[in-house]
Image (cartoon, rainbow, N blue to C red; front, side, top):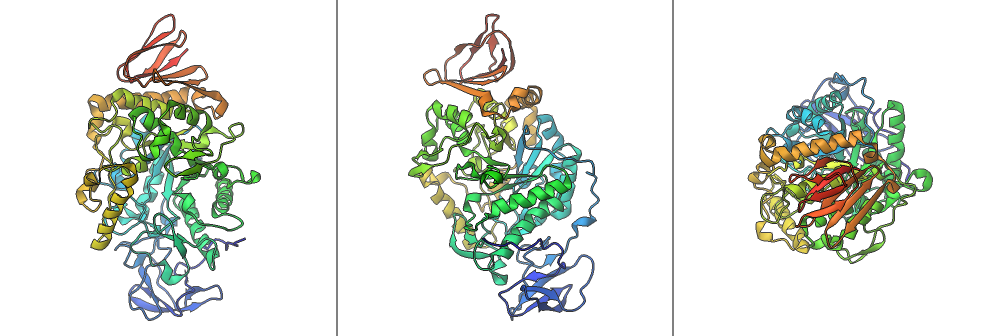
Length: 591
């Protein structure tokens, strides 16, 4: 078993763990201060240090270049420059009465700070919170905001895990954002990346064995189980606590946990769950951990008492794939196995499609079944679009892209119904609620030309298995790629955009009004499909979600009642309970 050290928040603000160098000096406020080494390889200033906000870095051995603090709270000059101190306790919070938001029954909204508004800042995002409240959102999931190299980035190239990117406004802007969300009744989930570090500005190996031999898809493996790993694990656990304690965040989305290489007796994720549960008990508000996992293994959400990791929820990409294929007909790459409508039926009723079945994309059996008798449906977070499933397409095209072959207004409404009215925790991706015409493309701003070229070439190689044309892949380094990915908020006010937004708001209201739409039992949802007619019916208590995914109109006997919501082309229900749906249309019926 790997023993993890106690929390490090009680150490001095200039203390640093650095077992590798033989000498460490502190450069602070323009002066060099000697440091002494402790028995635990933590270094402490050996002379007086200044108070207040100051810039600082560390001189390692005889290297004349100061390096930033591994636990830096600010990098005002970029990830290669000096760190700057920041006291999170100096912020005047106004959320004393905030009691949190539980994940069960909630709607999540995923946003990228840099493209959510024209300004691309946390303060600008504050001005759009009323839109989310009107939409029926409960939790705002913010894509990674920690410091990265360059001016703009998706966030998954971060290297300073404790620092909020200055281009977004820095740590105080982040505190204002969370405080403002809480004032509007919105919780905040922060997306964090602990499975790799970005390709530029990672100075951690100069200090200590933060990394180990081997690589995952995105970089060198983090050392979670080798020599020195106790302090590396503490580094991550302290980072988790920072978001929840210093920034009052309500939950974390844990990026790609399948890439965490940990053979310890107690997995890092379980240890994380233990510490977050303790903090939640102390703060007396729910604190949520959501795993992005490619394993399709419910061990992530199984309670620790039953031998699981004890996390609260995990993403289910299978649900996205089944919905995407059912509506778009696209079957390239990993979509191939989801072609029949029975795939959609299976994920609705059982959570995963690949639960020990053969995955043609992977070339092997994949997944583990969910114990549907004892698992709550809200523990699976689902979406019909998200940053990965849009941004990792060749041109970053959304389902609402106006180009031929994409979904019409009725199909977009059906996608919304499947996500918001299905049995799982729905997550919306910024702009989907008004059929945003702007793409969400993959963008970077690496100052190093070679790194920019390697990133662009890597993107093209990634798309080979999906059969997408590499010639149309936009250059991630081109500033226009970033600019065209910004939302156009004026679209909401007219035409198809306004009509779809109205439907999303209606569906959000129905979720709050009808308890069967948030019933957490797998047994409470039944899905019928007719492959020939392309008909899908979700039975949710007194409600039926009826979707005609085919081209021709359908007549469906639902029983007498009323239509509570319908997609753009409408629906007619007569007194005998005969529902008439145009092609591609959907309706919610109270029978």
